[in-house]
Length: 301
Image 1 (cartoon, rainbow, N blue to C red):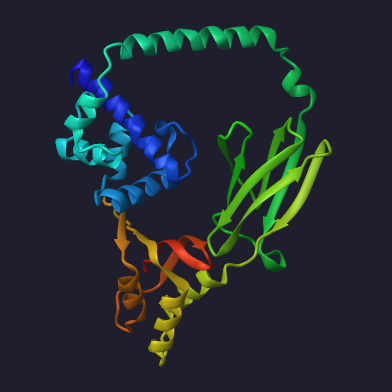
Image 2 (cartoon, helix red, strand yellow):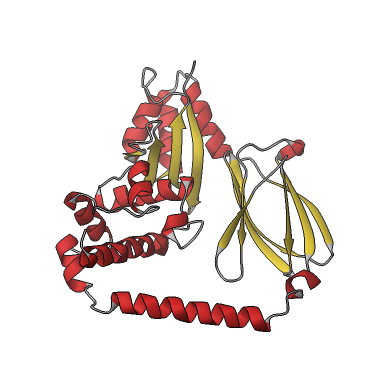
């Protein structure tokens, strides 16, 4: 690709990330650091807003790595529409800047100078002087082990850091007097917690409450009943009309499939339906109703 197309495509990728982050959260503002759940949420948002889809492999090829060729024009048009433009040509026309390369070089040199200056003036031991050890352990009711636990540390600069868990506990160091964490796990109600770190060795056990609706949805997909009408009425009541319902496919080249509310309920209530034995991956609520649901179908061997 020529230099102008390269600059325009880099701008488009940044615009895509900014558009996504207006209504969604991700591990980092830098799209090249997105992984797993971040990419799936982007696929879902793209499908919802412009009825288009890119695979995870495509994302790695063009967003997480440099590529000598531009994507297909239909994908460029799709991403441009996602960011609010008519098409790729419209995006290029309205975003052309002759000094993009010069600005990037000036910004890089300025950043290097500022960073070097800060390294010189900040004492090397300042970060170690107030360091505190934190150990948090997470459990379900009756001290049950929780699978697929996700703990995200919300930092003061509005960035996020995923804390890896080992045997239900996370351990980390901090200089902060207060921390804020977002905790999530399938079939448990998520928590946003704040804690005052007032000792050098802070320890705590935190308990999550089971998500009864998620458990019931899974149970309904695995069981039969004589009263399908009653089950259908309950599902109509508990799921919002504008709910975003996604199936995560096993084929990573396709990623996800979007369901309308009534189609999802119909498949869940037909005794011979194929939507059986689902596994809830993510569920959120708004005004007491399910407004976002992501699931996969368990495979039996």
